[in-house]
Length: 260
Image (cartoon, one colour):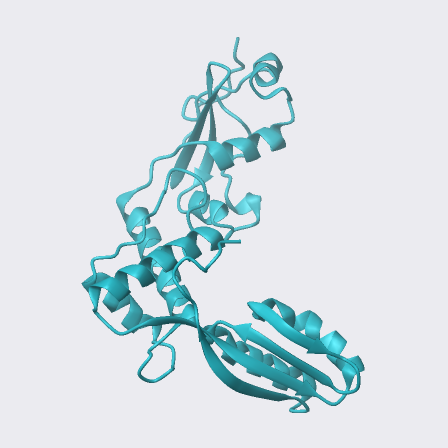
C-alpha cells in the first residue's frame, strides 16, 4: 500500500528515478542541479531538492510507506535514501542542459590539457581557447555521461585530457608536449618553510628532494599550469622572502601518467 499526498504541481523540475526491490522510487529536483551535485559543483542539497521527500510518483504525490522503504533500502531514513537516489538514479536531461554540460566539460578538459602541456617550440603552455579550437579541429569531443555518475570528477576529466593530448599529438593540429617543470624553492628560514609546505605541497606532482637542515631547499616537479599559482602563493605567504627557480623540463612519456 502507498500513502497518498495531494497532487503536486512543480515547475523547472527534474525527476530522478531509481528502481530497487521491484519498486520505482522518485525524487523531485531542480533542473541543472542534479548534474551540479554529481559533479560536486553544488554541495548544498537544499539547492538541489524541490521537495525533501521520496515518492513513488512525484506528479501524483504518492509516497512509499515504511515497509516499502525497508524492503528496498534496508532503512527508512529518508535523507539517506534521497542521497542514494540522487547519486544512482536516472533522469532525463534537456537538450539545453546537455549542451551546457558538454561545453563546461570541454572547457574543463581543455584547461587541464593547458595545465599539463607546453608548446615545445616556446616551452610555454597554450591558452585554453587555443586548446579548445585544436580539439575541435582534431575532432576530439569529451564524452559526457549525463544520466550516470559524475562525469566531471577530477579523475574523469584528467583521463579525457590525456586522451585529448594523444589525439592532438597524432593529428598534428598543433605541436604539443606533455611535460613537467623541474623547479627549486629556497628559503632562509627552515622553520617557516614547514608551515609554508602545508600550503604549497598539493601543487607539486612529485618532490625529488626536501632539506630543512639549515635553510630550506626543495626540488620538485610541477605541471606547467601550476607554476603561476605556486609563484603567487610563495609571494603572498613570504612577501618575497623565497626564491623560486625554473631548472629544466622533463618530458612525460606515454603510459607514464597515472590516474590517482
